[in-house]
Length: 605
Image (cartoon, rainbow, N blue to C red; front, side):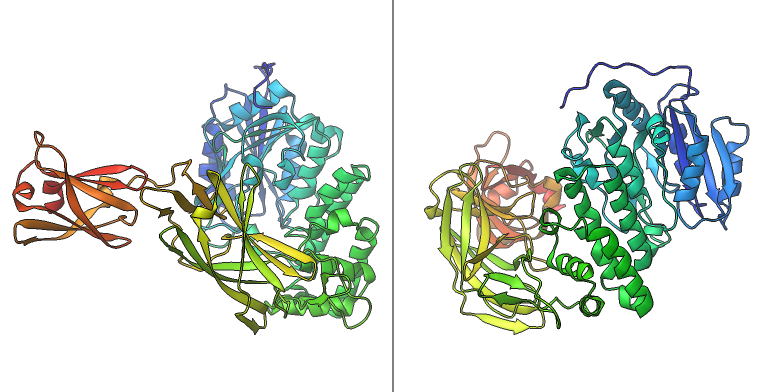
């Protein structure tokens, strides 16, 4: 849905939103955070702020008390330190009086119209949870800003279909009655991920949710001091508690089937699933007895749920670790954990009989049906008269065998038409990461019949097993990603699309070059040669194709000699008589017809 239903407005005399702020040692940020709430464009009395200081050792509590003096909107509470945001959030929720609750971290802030817009949508749609797009400010941040669910604004949609389940942080607007009626609280006992079971349960008990992606509503602060909780981490034992709590939340609130399996993928085989428990940190953090207890706990919960609908969506390391845990093979789990700690790939072999990649433990059956990916990396792209030459390498991590064959595939994005080109796989090398094939292949634009976008893939084959990967997503550091123009006049453009995959636009059918601005070009030298004046230009000139000059406003534009020396330097040669005129200007044009005019008098300055 994209249209906003008719609004059924809130009671203007009551509290609309309770903003709960858990606070721990945020003296540098808390005033800005509170002021961002007070700056909301809502009527007087519509908001209450409940700040819960969790035993701060800095001046946070004193700052809060000063901000609350002579004000009725801010309620300050102090509790002994609990070690996470869960307890202070629960404390604040118990005291909240608003129809909605928003959990705001003490170092983050709202956009000025955030709560009015979120509340309006919640009232209009009857949504139990409303998500607002998030943005980053400040310095660096541990972890990425959630983005998967915010491709477009959606009203009254399913939380799985809309991908809202990909973001389980507490920075959302929750209908308080849903939280109270279903006893939804933040679980205690760990400091990272305590909001995941909370948000998941709220989703599961909401009739539907809404997503606002038209602007940033919530700003996440990236700290440069490394003191935010996410950056400090927690031991694998705590991660086990986190994922088992989320698993139990999903199981207790869903029926067996596709939706449950879909939700279970995240805590079991997702990026922060089994690898956070039995991965690279386990051996250093826990002794053998603790590790055995962890495997036992994991196995008891996960073994009855483990099936192909979940397993097939994990990376090989996650698939192997869960399979080993379900078997109760602690020795082999420790082997895999040690490899991950050493940043080495898990060794794989190819099972000829079953045509699949497998991991072979020291005891017991091999672990097969692995969802391997093709590691590929572009090293260079060189333009030719009618296409490009692509150089790079590929292979499967941990596999010491080259493929039997490999191809570059060009597939038309709309029509599905495919053009296949064989890759020479004779150049290989083997290291601890496995065997890699180095390749160089010529992609000719003339072989493409239909105009439009063609996406490039690399396909490798071991016996009857095929592994395919989008070409270009991984590439050498510092590689130039600017679009490459093919032909004169232009026949096509080679570019990296929004997914970072390499593509060819035959036609072309879209614009790919950003127009160069006058201020981006600079004269770094100028000199006379006979009756000509040469201006040496520095700036983004690699895609410039032609130059012209106009001696003054009354003169006609004439072609100038244009010489490109490198991606960022070129020379323009014009008659000396024209260059000396006060109104003389030159114009550069790129392959797509974008132009930039430069007054030579300005450049000479």
